Every structure is written in C-alpha cells, then in structure tokens.
Image (cartoon, rainbow, N blue to C red; front, side):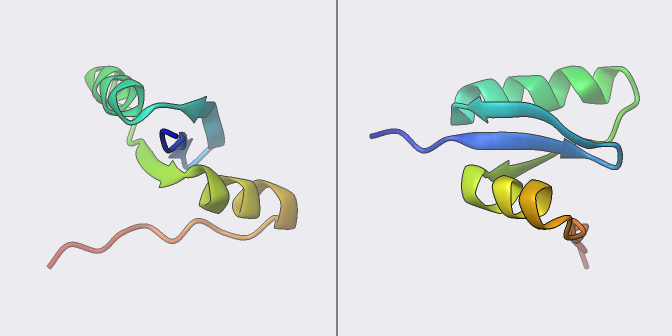
Length: 61
C-alpha cells in the first residue's frame, strides 16, 4: 500500500490524499507561484483539519 500525503499552506489544506510523487510536483508548482507549501502525512493533515490544531512550520537551522 502506498502512503498518502496532503499539501498544506498557511491558508490550510489545499490538496487531499495524493501520492508522494504528486505531492512533490504540487509543491513545486505552488513554489513557482510564490506560495509556500508543505507536505504532511495524511494522518497529520487529518489531525490538523479535524481538531483545528495549528501546523507547526519546520525550522531549518
């Protein structure tokens, strides 16, 4: 079984249940339009949507 992912931006979840390759391509497309997008697991995306929890931006140091 393939894992599914969701695309998240500051505006919320934009894409539901996509494959890894689709998620990478979508993030690249959003980046071309100046939109910061992040790939989260389907489980994490559902937690954010259902419980109204905040998405914690990754910090790169």
